[in-house]
Length: 465
Image (cartoon, rainbow, N blue to C red; front, side, top):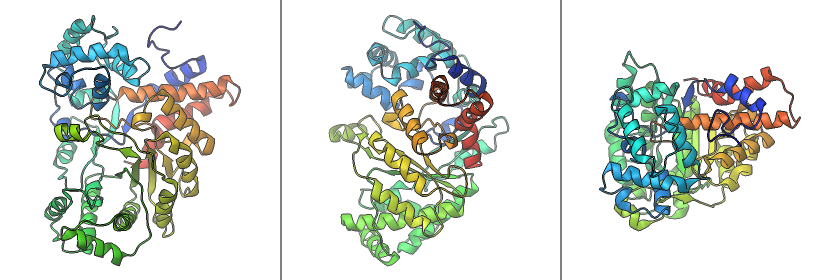
């Protein structure tokens, strides 16, 4: 029997352990998609206690606590941070089999040298020990980033953001981690959502372009892309909860935009055309600036309308959508490829049924550089042992696993960088299993190079930050 989460955690063979310890363990981290706050990084945000660092805003933990019958007062409500920590500690034993169990203990081990198992009995002792370290200095946001050996962070930013904190971080002489913006124009695509016209007003203000028609709108978006590029942005990101595509003309898209600008709702068919033309326009801009384009697909958000009204978005009431993506996704990528304007593209789906769809589809549009079109790492509900391994196996079965650009945190927590360790261990375990089974040669030079590529080097070359 192996010890709980010792140095062999997730590694079942000598080959896997050699690959991890020799080639993967000490590599820097390129976190090319996350939701960290650049303001908090600039200010080197400190935490008064582990609840603030761990439970504020973590909807993964909130979902588990609700499933365990914890009252909302102890999750997002007004209870004390200590009582919230105790509630989470009471929930932890119930999470065995869930990645939260391992992530929680990895974070305790790596950041705080705490190897006790968290439960109701150990909670008071762990609370004191971790808080003593948190408040004793050296555990601010920047400190945690440095401790994790992070080289690049890409935050998620609206086109109307000023990027002032990215600029301030760039001017800091004592912090050499690159903190770069990512361009996420979702609010400019959701033409039927409340707040769309207010967002257009803000885009008009920040771009200093009066938006009276669709050309003005596209020009304003282009100006923000140029501004983001000057501030280090090399990645865009789109949440495509429902994937849609329909061939259209600029004239049709322009008429639809004008209709929305007058406060009218547009039909579903019109929405498809507007999104299709606008996304294609944006894709061409990304290609022009040599950015990577990310599509996050198939999330079904804010399902509990009562809780959404009470708590807002990103509070733990999202799930997996089950729409059909193969045809519209292929059409969208093809519309760009036809004009030699398809940028580097990373495709993620939160629905594992899409694994083989994406794994096979990316092969239709490769060429020009290694791994130009990527099957992105297992995302959100798939961000666990089985989900990660299935994504990697699909990619290796249908494409080139060796060209995979690897892991990201997609997190709002400064403690989430242990997920890169979790991922790297699984990469080494999978390749080690192939070696042990005689499916690939025991060539450590070759395999070690592949491991280093997946865990770090491929992303470094792909994004060229």
